[in-house]
Image (tube, rainbow, N blue to C red; front, side, top):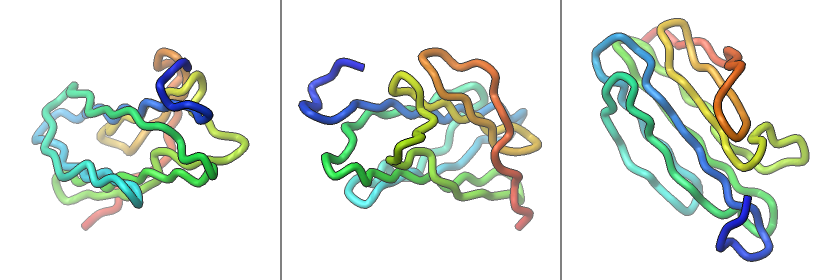
Length: 118
């Protein structure tokens, strides 16, 4: 992906609410960037771009809450087998868990995490 990142890659992460209701609450951050707490409506795509750290140790995580459920997980982690193909990662919150697709456009989502009951 061409970018203004210089010697490192630029990445784009998407977290989409595919839940029926009510809103999904999320908090995403890295060691250096706190993206804050957000309440997102159904079908809303919360997304951001960033340049990978030149040392190759970039990590972004998200914590999601829905009804009496929650889950925290890494949405991006630098490593040799990074699943974010072509610089993009797609995550979806669904009623039965959290799904992932990596690629230029989202397709073939696979379930990665179950909700934890609070």
